[in-house]
Length: 283
Image 1 (cartoon, rainbow, N blue to C red):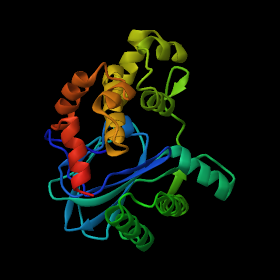
Image 2: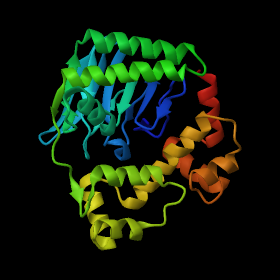
Image 3: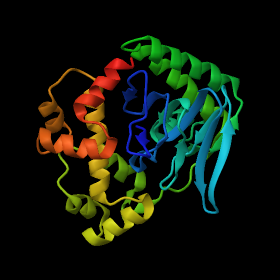
């Protein structure tokens, strides 16, 4: 889910593991940042080696934190957040959907009104130990043991919910839909998206009002959100089964292979074929 800040692609040595409510990936280079369409995911990062400068954005401006090997950070979900890792970072990133956090809260305390608090420079031995097991599983196994990864992510999510919870804020809404519902719509309908009109109708707003609200709260236009989601869908397909590039283009919602290549190269600095090769090379 990471994207580059300078037009290049962050180097990874294993393909990400993705599921409906989480994803796990290793970043061995950078700089990188989290795309806006994934800001409704909580992000737990463990720093594997070296000293890393983590940049985050607040109302007062950009701040930075130096994190050493074994340190962790939690970036709570929310639109407009900005977190960056510089060149040379070696990190494990675990993205947790708020739905997973709410389900654990419901099972643990009988309430789903729970979220996570943002923390930097955590020295948490449980996050470190689970993170190292996840890192080892992803880097050394090709493909990784999905059942083992799932169990580790579930254990990590349970730990951070119990240790670093906060009451969930009232969800930000655009008309009748929450931001989370809108972001999920952009991700889940990449191939069948039929334009702003139908989604605007669900919110009860006009197209122009809906588009302005999305840009104000998320920082991207609806079209840019869909395009970004299609690029992420293409990445997922390229990391998986050896389907043809034309099939990747069709499944990810692009008009044809040349359209996929142009957009993908502009966004990542790599052609789809080269992206697939890097994921194979660095396993």
